[in-house]
Image 1 (cartoon, rainbow, N blue to C red):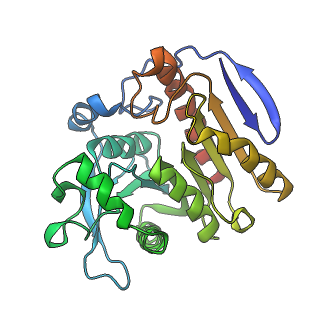
Image 2 (image 1 turned 60 degrees about the horizontal axis):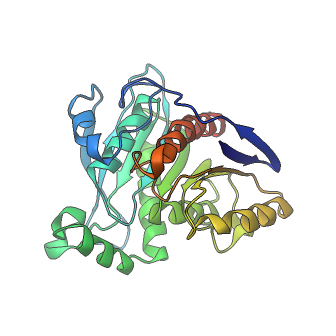
Length: 277
């Protein structure tokens, strides 16, 4: 089973598989890391690399954008990648968000940090990316996200509402952005640390955590208590038995990661649709 703390109410729910839809189709969950490329290759949606100008930076922010197939204007969702940098898996998440009706933009937060001004793909592998990402400090992250948000708001297809979703390293930065950007509509945190200044959070926040993630999940309850005292919306979902990174590594933890992913993603989409309408 998994438990959720929703605005102070504890509830239990069975964690059977919820979706049978293929990744990349409306109502599905994102592909795991192993199947991201195959999902992207068959996507019917328009996705492309774009360069976003960030004030004060010489190197543009290389970003992957995917548009939904819908007749009306759509909310924009920014995606903050993990400590692993800009990966095919992150692009797969963007494609699934577009399948679910959002304009998804996933900036490479390592743009300009690689050789000759390159980004994640120029650093020569995961270990180098993980080492280099420590150079990316909070002021730079906020500036990059603000530039991406402004880019999204100016799109003719955009509705004027912007949210953010982050994973791991990006999850912590998603929470931090909720405190730094007062015009943000919603923030989703996947297994990331809380913002340092919770009093500055202006938008609703939803958090998704693995019950066996001993590094991050112990921060959840005290953060929930603090957010409640401040009158802030913080919807917490903790999935029994799931580990850190369960949406990316869905095959782990003897099935618990898959069960967590099956329940976390539809809750994510419902939260974003509710607060970005």
